[in-house]
Length: 197
Image (cartoon, rainbow, N blue to C red; front, top):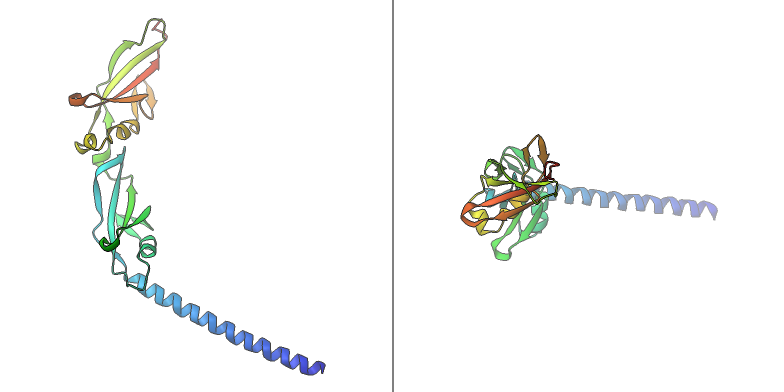
């Protein structure tokens, strides 16, 4: 009886091994088919958004194409790389399903975007903030701000992410920013100055 149990056990192990091998083969075929399908995905021409997101950065968008109906287009979007300004991005920051309009990938590009490189220039010393304050007010207009940034209220983000160097000091951003209409967006700093007694 013991020998019969061993033979039965060996037969079951062999059957189990055959089933496991069939599953592995099926999984391998499935992955190979998915790889063939993925190889056909491509991005339509990526386009930079007209407005900047912040200093030195702009959003880019493209629609994923050639996705079969049997494949989830959002998954295809997240799995497909793109090249922007010669740099390969393995996947979008996020994907947006616009229904019949398609699925769009969105990237944030923070290099090679000269239109988004704002800077401060022509610093104006406005004097002490008040007697005894030990604070001096410095103002500067934000340069290279694109015209559309005012319409989209992005001037504040652009201003607050632009660094400045003056009086041998470096600032990652102004203390605050103001939009003075036709005079543009300005960065404002209050710096320590013991001369303001």
